[in-house]
Image 1 (tube, rainbow, N blue to C red):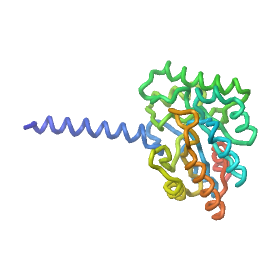
Image 2 (image 1 turned 45 degrees about the horizontal axis):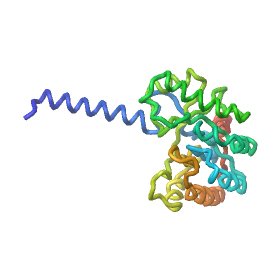
Image 3 (image 1 turned 90 degrees about the vertical axis):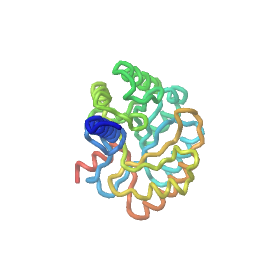
Image 4 (image 1 turned 30 degrees about the horizontal axis):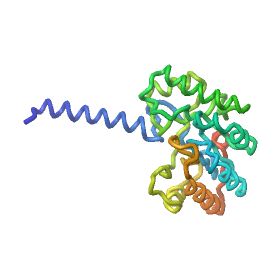
Amino acid sequence: MASPVTKALGAAAAGAAGFAWYHGQVPTSQFYGPTICRVPEAGKLIALTYDDGPNPEQTPGLMDVLERHGAKGTFLLIGSWAAREPELIQELVARGHAIGNHTFTHPTMPLRSSSQLREELLRCREAVDAAGVDFSRVDGEALMRPPYGRRRPATLRTLRDQGYVPLLWSITCFDWRRTVTADKIIRRAMRAEGGDIILLHDGSHLDPAHDRSASVTATDAVLSRLTEQGYRFVTVPELVAAGRTT
């Protein structure tokens, strides 16, 4: 039987691990450093964000859906896919959408050294630069979303040192799950209120042309329903700017 001291040490270790997991994974936690996750001062504005593209099979149709509703989105690009689709990146920017860095290979950033993180960020930036466009910015810093939302203090320091502002989210739609349906995505997204940042995907880090049709269908429905309620959909930089003027 374990002694009281051993039990106490075990409980303390478990508590510390839980604390670290929570603040390194939950997207709205600010304990490890400031991130953009929600802008409640922005009134009835919402930001739709899409990870893991550009996707030649899904992103064009998604852009058409957004345009039909007069909405703008924010797309967090995987560099290895961006290098394959320069014209698609150019079209995203030309249509008024915001783009950001989502690393080159989609690693778990807290498990990488600072030099490895800098390489991931640089290679993604080079792929976007090669398309003749630039990342969208907030206060002069380019947008960057850590894969899976995972970070630790050293992760955020490296991002800041490289000129990035960390972007997370406040509404998770779980559209990466294999059993997801458009209806399930819609139910999650409809929880959004003014200032929320919604996480969706137009791609997958495992497949450059992954089927995200459920996310595209859900986007169409969410835009219809929330627009009828008086919400407008803007890019993350626009959301942040609006929050500062109210």
